[in-house]
Length: 321
Image (cartoon, rainbow, N blue to C red; front, side, top):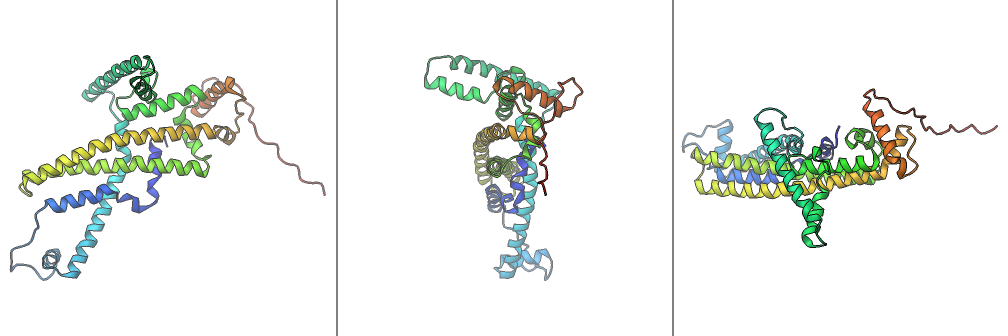
């Protein structure tokens, strides 16, 4: 499991978090937009789903309760589907799932070229005297990888790439490759912090899906003459505005998640080496070399690596009788 895929492990523990605020908003918009449907008077059947709708329209308590239960079941099922889409959405927004060939690849290359030009402008601003503009440029450069080859087509992808580049440059470790073993050595505070930031990221991703669904259904319903035009346009505009805000918030959440992962790796790197019985570095002089050798060992590519004597604790001798 990679660092991005691990986002899905946090909020999947409790079913209550699956029904986010976006699910309630989407359901409310759908109910307000759709015209109340009732069969013509005098043809309501005695049994069947249509009878429940007729009874609910007449205010029958049991029918209203049945429709409320069905609404909760429908909202929960839809939330499960949206939750399943949240992880792939983060992958897509990070640029890791985009094709490398075909017409989409040309758009991706164009997007990367634009981000490289923006990076050069930020670099020029960061070299100015200590001003607010220069400080903002340095902050943005912190979220972009130094090497142009690691530049992603999106802000979210750049945030992950910059974090991985800093970890590799400082410790010589491949964060993505070390992540499965690293998760096993995290202490409880680190797990709580990672769950908290992953909940934030996936919560915003789920609500972003709900906002997109609101835009996707509002205008088609109006074109099909199921709802009035102006409420559908207002709902679509509101969904687009909320979606734009959520997309910006999702980028901020990914920044916090990347910072939390980087701090957790910095704190638990000795435990990471100990879990593999790998001799840890003695200082900053050999830390990067040790991390690169350990990464090559985990990658198992068959490249030559220095011979390592595993650092296993000496077994305790039994006490004398």
